[in-house]
Length: 232
Image (tube, one colour):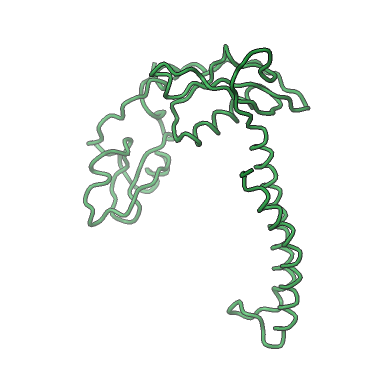
């Protein structure tokens, strides 16, 4: 079973210096040869090994081996979860149990409810929210305590994430509408601008009228945006 941090071969990700002061690519981003020499170091980026070789770079011979994480070793040849495919066209509630870093100290898992079309989608939604909210990747779904539906019949404490995802969907819709308004405004006013991007003198009045119309059309979006700030 492999214990490397990335797959071998031309598709594995390697790390290179940005700019012209580079001769090698590095499998380990912590290699001293990669980020040393601060007078010439301006940052680094990840590219595939094949791309690095096309740039004429050779593999660093001084890179310390990147230590494998437990999950990489355990699940290198097996899926992290076994989830039955249960997709339905209509979204339905799921309860997802997540154990975070507190499990090391005996803290019980936390329960979350989301709407989803299938179990895997529900788990992904909750894990993504949990990891970002708590700034950690040390979180797992407790499959034996996760199920379709909402907790009932027991005095469980659970967090309902459904309003949060409804809010995010509304914000996505607002962003789409705003992009459409900007596109229409730019298409209408493009012929009114000079080479410097400023309205032509003879078109100044027409441009200001178009700008006022666009601002009027955008105001309802501003009001909706203010109402979707996530605060009660």
